[in-house]
Amino acid sequence: MWKKMSVKHKTTAKYLRWLSSFSCRSGSDAALRQDKQTGSLKNKIRKTGKSKRLPCPAVLEHFDRQYSEELGDLWAPARAVLLDQASWQYGVMLNRFSSVTNITQILLSQGFSSLLPQTDVSGELRNDASTVPNSTHQKGKDTLSPHFFPKCPPEAIGLLPYITSHAISQAHQSELPLNFPHSSLQCYIHPDPLRFPSQAHRPGQLKQYYLLNAASLLPVLALQVRDGDKVLDLCSAPGGKAVAIMQSATPALLCCNEPDPHRRDWLSKTLESFLPPSLSSRVMVSAQDGRSVGQSEAGFYDKILVDAPCSNDRSWLHSSYRHQGQQRLEDRARLPVLQTQLLKSAISAVRPGGVVVYSTCTLSSLENCAVVEAVLNDFPDTEVENLWEEIVLPLSKYFTFIALPVHKQIDPKPSLRPLIGSVSSSYHRLGILVVPHPGKTWGPMFLSRIRKKG
Ligand SMILES: C[S@@+](CC[C@H](N)C(=O)[O-])C[C@H]1O[C@@H](n2cnc3c(N)ncnc32)[C@H](O)[C@@H]1O
Image (cartoon, rainbow, N blue to C red; front, side):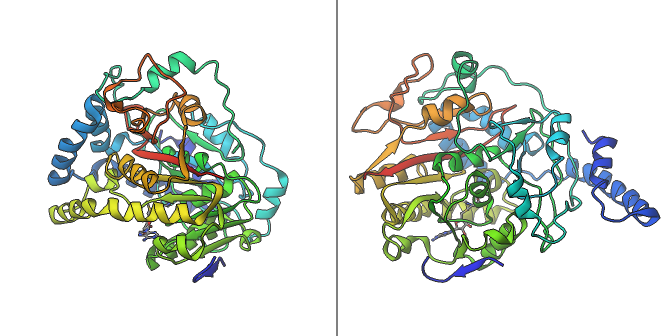
């Protein structure tokens, strides 16, 4: 049980056989179950194809207005991806604490490849998992849903400074070594929108993998967690990034904060599903309003992730009814204030020399650059770090990045200069934005790393 802190601190037969192979049962009972499950998996595949939700007209209209202005020509391909749920790709982040080890071979045999450089997962870590009773794989509750989509024409150049993955990959891809420090973090991706089955939560049993939008790993990579760090995940539920942090390193403390009680339960279940009990002394769940940690825990943490509440463009676009969409648009207008308060609070809670990573899953500049800029203005002892060489260049093969405007004090007219063809690693950006694009549907994801000067 995870400690609570109140104040401180291709749907192919092969796949189906694989899914069924994890059954703990044997004999005719198992065979019968297997047949039923295979049948239900097939049913689910058909349902997935039919159950696409229509976009909410009010939200789509709003996005069209705002994003055509902010993203220029990049909005049309991003819009196409956001509207076409069947094109969405899913990353498979492996759980290094799971004792089941054949997932990698299965992924590779199905055409998945590793997003990050790989290292062998140590036996020691797997032994940790062995302390969890029955830490075997649980049969997936969903099924694989292959969808195919046409390849898109080459990217067009927009008005904002941006660089496409195409441009970067031509220039740098082959000669750049991938040199992430987080080598134990492993995520597999597929060029097609194949979806692995998700695994149901079973108390006391570790899951083998977490399905996610691969762009969600970028804020965790930018956080650069090292063994022994004191880390705060300020807005933590449902816990995907907390799990990714624990795949990356072994911090002395990871405090996962979530004020919403239902979402906190979800967070606790996620942690229980992915981390062995031996880690429960260093991974804690707290329930604070993130805006108060700057006061209650001033200067305490080495690294803080602010994965802020935001207008989640993917899901908001598919709001289930008009009223919900309109309500969300009203909420959207209020979010930058909350986000700014959370980021300020995090800056106060990090030690001098420490870093805060701010991230959202919206394309909206008001929730991204504007928030970072407001906070930088209030904290002269902070600076934004350049994620260009560390994140953009090595991963440009997989993601479509926009490098967001240079800080006003350094360049007064940043938004008018396209970076294509004149890329300079010395640009000082407020952050980077992953924009969904056909074939690379990852994102939206904005991230910015702010260091408190030591
Ligand atoms: C984008 S979600 C976080 C996703 C999570 N980091 C993950 O990777 O699974 C934002 C979270 O912030 C929480 N939140 C909302 N207001 C908050 C506040 N005042 N302080 C801290 N967290 C808050 C929301 O309940 C929500 O769970």
